[in-house]
Length: 121
Image (tube, rainbow, N blue to C red; front, side):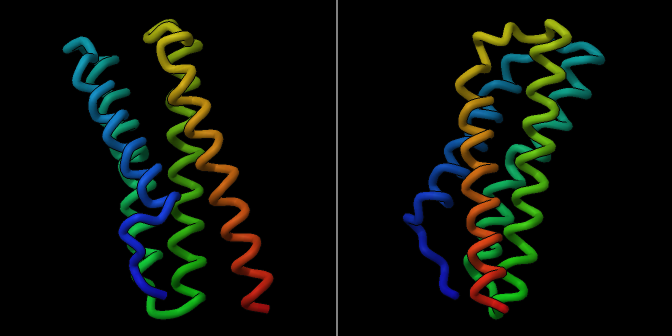
């Protein structure tokens, strides 16, 4: 396994993390904004960080482990996006594209993990 700077999933997760940070910078300075901002910043940027770690893995087992963490972080991020939309904190039409991208990242990560586990068997 070697780090692939320009891998599609790596670049997409990086860009997604940047979009999450930019979104949070616009949050109101109140309890909801602070708590939701901290939660989604952690999970939304962790996706790419774990993918980067996976791409530097020294074993297939480590690669699968890190990609599974990235998948879990993506699912958590989608949860927070849903909370924000459903609570009216952010209008759903303003974050629909982030929700769509998050869903696509989840689907890609599920496929990567499944295919890697098959090859590892």
